[in-house]
Each structure stands twice: as structure tokens, then as C-alpha cells.
Length: 357
Image 1 (spheres, rainbow, N blue to C red):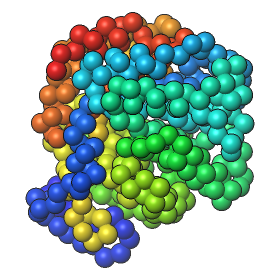
Image 2 (image 1 turned 90 degrees about the vertical axis):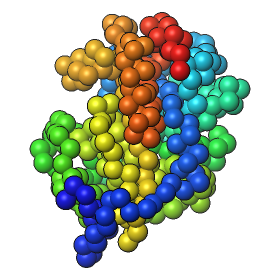
Image 3 (image 1 turned 30 degrees about the vertical axis):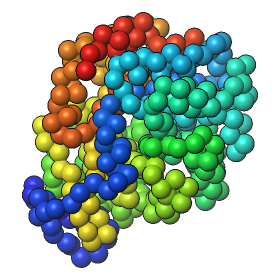
């Protein structure tokens, strides 16, 4: 069914021609006008040479000294970026703000300062919009495995802190849904209980996965309620649920924008999707990272900083990526891994400052 859309919610099949008229709403259009942003990975992993960790790393190791968030935002601005998105909490559960609902935060490190507050001030100084990445999967909090409804309250409370403590947040990127999604996978990867590897785009496979999500994952994560909760706090905050690199561009309803992790080779993109019996326009964000080396587990490039990794995209590669995204009317979110000194890598800074748009 390459030219047809199936409703995401359970119930009778509803078919719409994909080219029927549907336009972005006002908030989506403002988000689309940003076009190019900086993704910032920084957290407990930074200090232990990890990409993913299991929530047991000692917060005493988190000690970057002086962080210059102004530099992050200055470089983003000079590179032509209009927004920044930071990993407020990765799968390990470590929070970059002093959340009153967790002991696994910057408040219990030698550094102690609220990094989100620092970045918020810098983003305003340089005229950049602010977005937050938040992992709904949390390997540190025991309630994730032994008291699910208590965990859901914890998650909601942390999201409320994020959306009420730092001014306007134009994007909330949720990640880690697969830990409660048991069905729908074509090839299951046991380490993360998710899809094993990228497969070529297939319209029916995408629709089947949306249906599996609506039948199961959306229930466990209370996604319908969570979406409305976010909108009650910040109506203009664009909600995204990372569909992983296995299903790039697939909307895990309800969302406002779609995730295209490592989807830099996209040739076409379906903008109009069926949701709640209507045709909905859902713009795409393509995310990738400045690192291109990676390791055995993550061979296509690192997201967090590692002192051994000096690999980097070229200026020409970034320009080509932006050109492709522009043709797809998609945003590009380009990741930098901040070092254990709280700084951009020299190769990232140099490359971005040589990027003339």
C-alpha cells in the first residue's frame, strides 16, 4: 500500500489517498522554519567512555569543571543553526537538572549546577530555541521493573519539571519506548528488546508497526494521556517519539513531528498520515552525529564524547545533508558530543564554523 494510509488507532481500516490536502498547523510551521539544529549529548556516560550505561555509574565521576554553554550556542548560531536539543536524561536515568524526584542527578555530583538552566540562558542569549530529549526508559529507577504505575507517575513528574522550569520548550523528544513493546518486530534484538538493524523502507511494514504500537506500547506508556499532559503545559511543544533507525519517519501516534534517526539517505518522505480518522501533516526531523567512527556496538558514529574518537563529518557532507533535507522539507538535528571538560570537540567546532550556509 505505498500510496495509501491506514488509521493508527485500532478499529476499522480507513484509507486515504496520500496526496490529499493536509497542511502543517501553526506550531508545526514555526518548528519547520527552524530547519537546522544542534543535538547535544552530555551526561554520566561522558565520564566513563560509554554510549549506553545501565544506571549504576557513580555520579561522583561527573565533574566537568567549568562548562561554557555560551560556546556551544555561539558555535551553533554561527553555523546557521536555530535550535538546540539536549539529552536531559538518557536511558541510564541520570538527570542533567536537580530533579526533586530522583537522587541520580547533577545535584549529587561534584559539579552540582543545573546544566539545563545554564543552557537555557545561553540559548536565549544567542537567539536559539530550546528542545529537550528525555528517555522514558530508565535503567536506574527500580520502579521501572517492579512498580510500573509508580514509575509512570515519576516520569510524568519529571516531564512536568522540564516543561515548567525552563521557559518555552519547542521540542520534546521521547526515547526508549521499545522496552515495553513486545510485539511488532520483524527481527528482535534481545539487548534492547527492539528491532535488530535497519531494513529497507516498506510501507506495509511501517503500517503494521504503527498498529502494533497502538495495540500495545501506547497503552503501557499511557501515550494518549502523556501527549495531552504535555500540551496542557506547553501547547507549542512539538512531541516526538523516537521510532528508532529501524522505522525512520514512522509516527508512533500521538505525535506532532517524526524522527528520522540516521535517515540521511532518504529520497522521499511521506508527510500525511492517518490519525483519529483524519489526515494529519507530520514533518520530519533527520538526526545524525558529527562522529563517523563509532565502535563495534555503534559502528556508524558516536553520540556521546570519547577521547579516542576524532572522526568527523566533512563540511561538504553536512552541506549535502542539508540540501537533501531541504528538498524533503525536513529539519536536520546534527549531534555533538560534549567532552568531559564541558567543551565541544575541536574538530566539531572547526567544521561547524567553516560551514557557510
